[in-house]
Every structure is written in structure tokens, then in C-alpha cells.
Image (cartoon, helix red, strand yellow):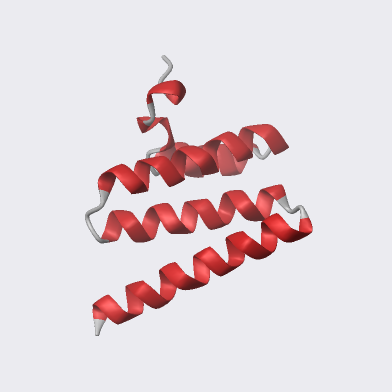
Length: 86
């Protein structure tokens, strides 16, 4: 049952991502990437989780969402080499 729930959550996040891209909602794209990252992390797929959280972090920076930056960074957005900074 938990696997089905995660799959549904992931499917919903991909749908939100597609809609956000279609309407040009960059902040919405970032949040969808963050949801995908969290879903993959809960499934133990660390590489995909870091990749999606890094995209969330990059978009948050792009749109000037400081709170979103903090959330994405805390979820592992800096795990990608291009986002690793001191």
C-alpha cells in the first residue's frame, strides 16, 4: 500500500511540474521538483532526490524565493556539485 501511495504522490508531482511548465510558473516548477526530490528520497533513491532538490534550489534562486532556497538547501539541493559552496 505504501508503494502505491508513493507512486501516486510521484505521479501527482510530475503532473504539477508539467502544468507549471506549461503556464510558465517557475516557482511552481521548483516546488514540484522539491516534491519529487522528497518522494525519491523516501524511496531511497538518493541520486534522483539530490538532482530534483538541486533543480528546486536553482529555481528558488532564480525567482528570488529566499524561503524556498532555504527549504531546498535543507533538503539536499547543495548535494549537486555545481551547487556546493562554502
